[in-house]
Image (tube, rainbow, N blue to C red):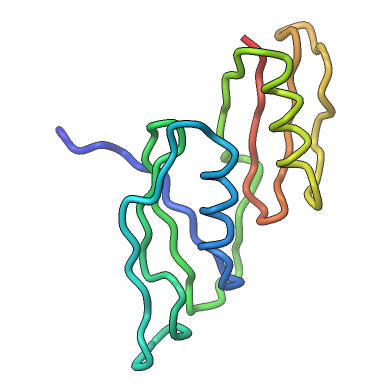
Length: 132
């Protein structure tokens, strides 16, 4: 298998684009690659995302706005691990990602890392932040 394995984020509140742009603003070397939108003929709300491909610090992600309301949503059992190079970087990401989110583990030294935090952002996506 030569194809890349890519994380796919399914948003159920028509906020995929907002989340994607929020993440792109947080990480260097990030960009939107492609966006496909629903038109007036549906089945999703016009203008929402069928599929968007984007990169966060060079790692590819895909997201969509699901027009089907599923019984499931994001879970902290699957998270994005971010290696931070400086205290300034980890503090910045912790502040931004935890704003209106849920802090699972505060930014602290847990013995396995100089500084570590586990947060669920305002969109429900989980992030583990680690200072190298």
